Image (cartoon, rainbow, N blue to C red):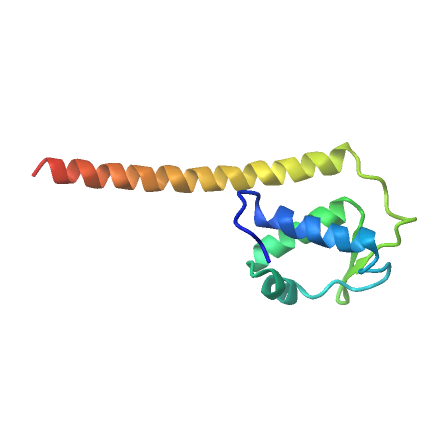
Length: 121
């Protein structure tokens, strides 16, 4: 389950799945649960789950097979984490933070407008 820690949910999910893969509970060749199943398991939206799986794909830990699903890649075949995957993860985090900031700024602007409307009466 995604916790309200301030860390984006997709990173929490990716961390948990990564731990399961590296710990062996998700063995090479094992299919990941479907996006819908993961969304239910982590109490998250489908888009958050897709972002988490995307991170694991970029890291080379899982591989998608069209029409079959996403499978844990054999660790011997998985490329080491590199700068490109770190940049992708950081870019995703910045996009998430930008969206959250825009929402807060919108709420603040709405709140300020309401207050100035009250004081002018």
